[in-house]
Image (cartoon, rainbow, N blue to C red):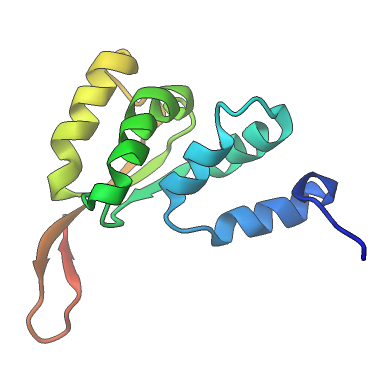
Length: 128
């Protein structure tokens, strides 16, 4: 039986796989800071648009989010051009950026804030 490991795959296929992983924070925490320069660089290549609207408030994601805010976000802060967050994430993002990113996300051009409320007829979240 032939075994193909992730690192045996071409970059294009790894990027395709990475783009399918949800929640995105899980992927970034799994690839950045693990000591594999190739996977880390591929993760940097896809982190221009960050979506933090997954329900990370569940207890199982507490350590993941702690790692994201302390280790990952400071390393990708210059790459982020678009950020989508829940209203409930604003305080955590603000604290992290102030403490670890010199108070700014320098290349951020798009910010989408999802309100926790949903439209009654469609169930679609309100956005700002």
